[in-house]
Image: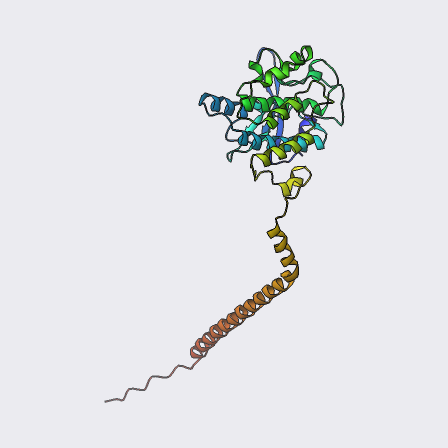
Length: 318
């Protein structure tokens, strides 16, 4: 419960808001206690269901769509890792879709704070677990990166980790080439860079596995190559998502515009203020004139009402 309350402080565009939690007990032969979590509602379901839907309709997820969602997921993961928070249960069923088609990471019930690699309890979903977690060794943020690579693989292939011939994290411990065999399932419509990115996240050795910062850097290259301009992760505002801001390259026209703004910007702003002040004075004068006219009418009515009544002429007797 204490860990859950700490998660309430996590606020990010691509993380499902954690509002509250409470204990609920169901009484039967034996009382069973449940920890209930109140979270933000995402209208369009989860990524797992979307992958099933697109595969059944024979309309697989395109590379541009995959890159957009991948960047949003990585933005959320970078936010968590910068705060030393491990998710520990990354999977497509825990990535949710909003009404506007953006993705948000949810189900932070197993999340835990850890600065580095530590001996922690093995938890999460088996087929998404990193090799070091399965083998019972100490693990850290790189374990999340393995799970993230599994999610990206599912988006690209439409094949879930549970459908593979064995648990990938366990299989790679016995056969290091298992990942290369698995990646051959990725369709040819995806670029070599996208395939290599997933491979770098599924390295058996966590020390050689990409960190979240490495992945975001590679993703930016892939997004640029694909001509993807994702408004949910603008380059100039990357710092608001926890990343390092990278300013776009200014064109020659932009340089001229910037120099012109330096030379004449002050004069322009001053003239705008002057025109605004003139308008304000005109409006104020018109307002005064309107008030004067209203007062004149009012005073006229008052004077008329104070006139003494004129006595009616006396009728002459006949």
